[in-house]
Amino acid sequence: MTVNSDEIDLAWSRAVAELAADSLVAAGLLARGDIERATEIIAEEVQVRLAAGDRPDRTNWRYKSG
Image (cartoon, rainbow, N blue to C red; front, side, top):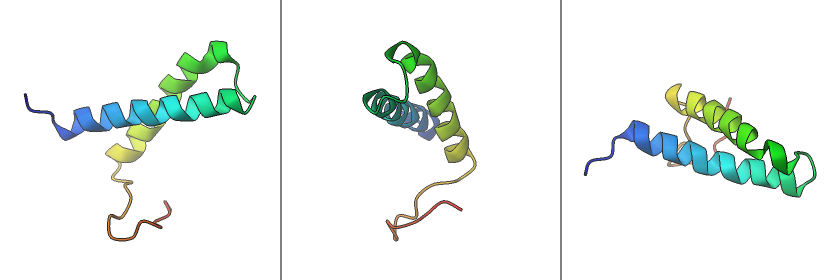
């Protein structure tokens, strides 16, 4: 089975979004009942950044997005 980079980006975006949304719940900034919708929104925003080529510089791990 071959996995293309779009599928990898989609899976990674979802994983990051789940972590971010769960962190917001733990911090008391998001209700547990809103976690799924927040995850969808966060994942979409991460995917947009990846699609736009906003990725970390692999040679400089201290890279900051512009």
